[in-house]
Image (cartoon, rainbow, N blue to C red; front, side, top):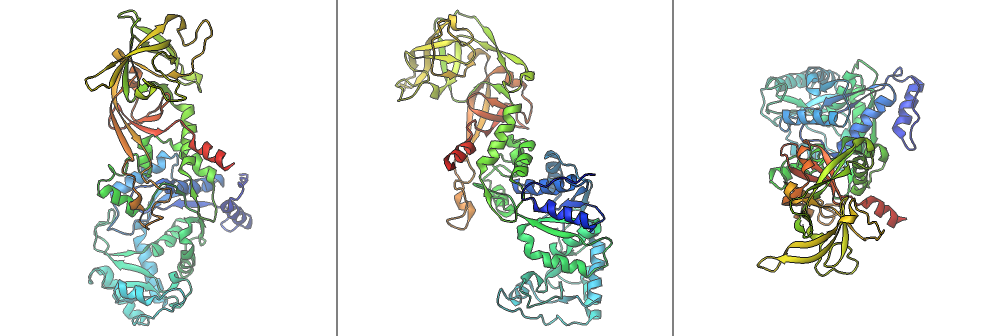
Length: 557
């Protein structure tokens, strides 16, 4: 196949192209997306998934989904299932779904290989002591008193660790590298620890489990991965990645680790630990709460997978961490939905509008386009009567300056219907306006006047006898500051207590009774809204109509 041209700054493609030219992997390209199944995927993972799969696809290779499931204490089948679903929702199909736990026997045998060759030893010290003895940057480490154990003793102890003779935390297996290495990762890292937790796949077969650094590179090698793509926090791990592989009789060429910048967004926290805290403390309604940055949360909110992937491709890959404005992601969502979402009318905070000169009992139907961006979506017929709902903030009894919507004596256009003029109001016992009375001009049917007079506002509406009731959730940022935790060091200190507003008694046009779970529609003048997948007639605001990203770019210009 012909090789793809790399985009500007796509250093990963340049590395792959150079490897292909040199015949490093005989022209093969194989990548993998290797999540730990200890939580739900979030927007940051979307970039990693896109990069992993695109690199493989662009060079005619394959990409696997591999679970790095080496910690029985934190991993669950629920997370495995959700990750598989999220990857496929984004539009990517793994060549294979694999598990590091399937390689536990091979990893164990390779660990014995290290021991036999004097490259690993069993340490009886606890984790706190081992950590303290590693020293720090500019501070030398201290050799473990067990570092020079004989091979036979290490092998015996390691086998007894596997047999379950020792308590959790009693012993670990450490690589024997260099306790004075400048790279802290090389100061005799732990390769195996005793864990008594129940594993979601191996059940109780194993009581010792490899650490990430021992399982990761070796799993890559077992699967014949060529390019192991990681985010920048693993740069310091690369020498250990290479060291481990260089000690072993590998079945294929040694894979190459390449690091790129992770995706960070303003007003967003992607730490699994902190997201789990939000779920555990009931601050959000679960991992798929529409305010969450998880892929399941974004899906519930109505974000199209295609928009997320397009955003990830647009920002590209770099070697420097940066934070993208969340408004840029929303712009991609808005652009996608503008092409695909059907238009409907909905009144979220209803105010009664009664046309006093309307023929009693008469109903007219207006033909309205479903999506002006796509004529193939056709038209619908919307009922109009003398009894309507309008938005409360579309009427002002005493209009402020530059208010062009409905007020006493002012004429406005009702979308696709008639011109109306407000004449009076009806109040409740507390003096609040509960109904607006108006007259209509029958000569303006369709929204245009024969005498060509103009009005300054067009308002949406819903016919009261034909309306259907719904609940609508409006969302603000889950975190009130652009950089959560910048002031205090704890991102959860910047939670927005008003991140959701739930509106009951919203009035929608009847066509919305046919909206399907997960479908996103545009409520005209209000924004894009997604039908909840579990509760019909419950809508989540996906994004508003205003392009905040364009406004930000304009201010910068």
